[in-house]
Length: 147
Image 1 (cartoon, rainbow, N blue to C red):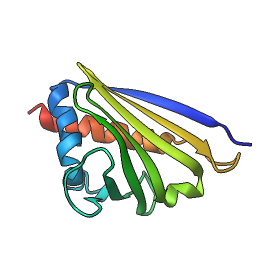
Image 2: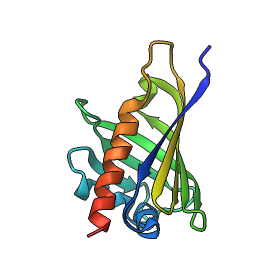
Image 3: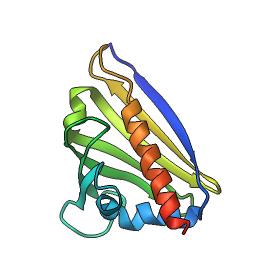
């Protein structure tokens, strides 16, 4: 029987932690404009703003993978703590994982990301390609916001 596992990464930030969090808070549908090789689209299902309970539909690609899709729900959004938690409701990654939750916490000088997941079977890989994508997006966004 598979068990829940958790992996984390910390990405150093040179720019403002407030600007970094605010981008994810208010502009996450615009990620495809900055990272078109990795993020093809992010749309709020039904339109509107990103808030707790919002459902997003994302099309993305990992290094060397075809375009994949995921329906993601914002479980928690805390402006004061600069944190956001999402859970994947459906999508291609469920071929490998039974559950997949991502949390971001932004503080002065870093963005901490964690992925809590349960493998669909013992042969499912570690979600390191997702950590790689997160790191790439964070570094690129930080560089963009720092100019």
